[in-house]
Image (cartoon, rainbow, N blue to C red; front, side, top):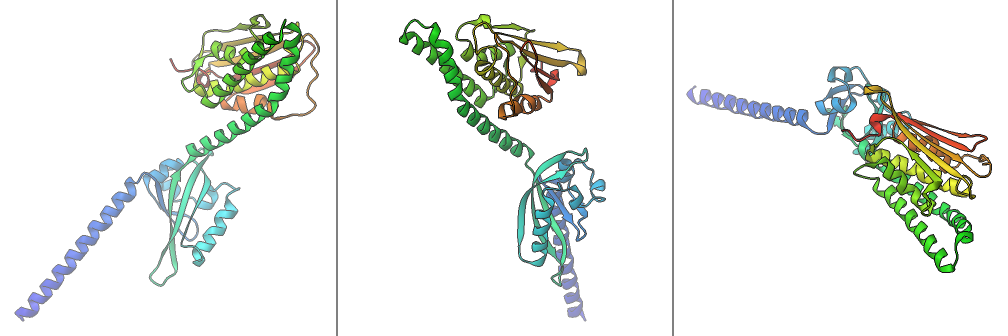
Length: 348
């Protein structure tokens, strides 16, 4: 009896030790789960979030309790839903061991966040799927950077295509005013170097921000040829942030190149007025920027909307959370940009 009791006692101790180790393992797993820097969740066979860690809740802007009431499908952007659903079916059928996809998920405020979702299946002992384990990484900033880089490439390609007509307009304007070939070459090269400088500004984005007056002058220098009487500036001292410098720089280049080809710079006697102002105060403070051309000859409005027009009407204003208008009238042309001052100005 003593031997049997010892064996039973030893067996019970072994079971208790194994249970204790299992408990510690589960606790450690739970601790890692909750403190992971990426979102981790369990998705039921109906698509509901069975479990979610704090990181997943933060990425999506919901509480863990709110996520439990939602399905992954209803949070998925409609454009990504078909491909995502097809891969889930292949995963459940055993055709895939796991899969990863870049997809947009709807946040609690209605906006979409780009994520990298990796899915694997957790199976029951009988081999049937029990639930899906999802690892969700926030890649929204990376996607925004990729989109910005893609646009920069498109903008530089546009400028390259535009360069021939810009040079043609420059030579037509410069040639009659030069006394020698040497003078013509020198003045043309100065203009081309200035254009190159504006392209460099596009690529660097004015990373540290810049005084608005310096930004305007830097973008227009290539088109003025030293004759600053062609442009009148008026506005308060204002240091713009990097994003605003980028957006305004693109718009100014587009406006100046169009003025050279078709507008106030295309014939002697034209002029341009550029005015900016701060309006209102506090959280309602706004920024207003007006480019007004007075050409020597009437400007014919373009017959189609090209890439340059999209820069002025959509891309540049969107970059600063504002809106812009283009207006052709009897006097010439006016471009107006309005935006929240907070999205333009470097904080004091």
